[in-house]
Length: 134
Image 1 (cartoon, rainbow, N blue to C red):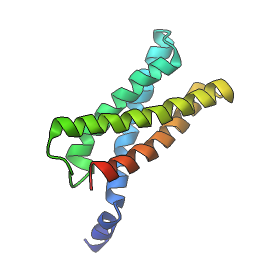
Image 2: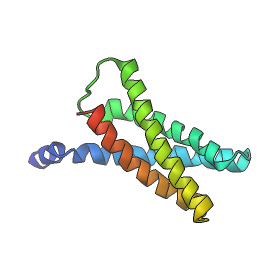
Image 3: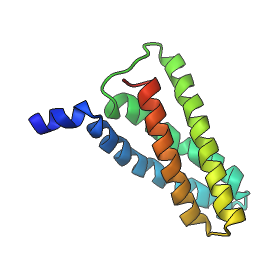
């Protein structure tokens, strides 16, 4: 019990839950990316936008129901809007990293996506924790 309280004080419980949820969301994200890019021949950057948004839907519902204990905003539509705006910034981090890895460094798509996901994960968690869930 005391260990659980110490984890909560530093947000570690939330971080672990956010990480677990992000693994599920990343699975959705990667599946959509590969499907759109390879099966439908859509440009990888455009596919990435749809894939990232699909994963963010998973993260939003988990965030409000399981990850974060306290919500700052009571206006749900406004909270969703802020969540999406933060996600859009995270998407910019994700797309920039993906583009740099694939087009500049000439890395394969999947390792590039994993690195981009790592950067956007850290960005999104920190900003959402500070702005929406405190």
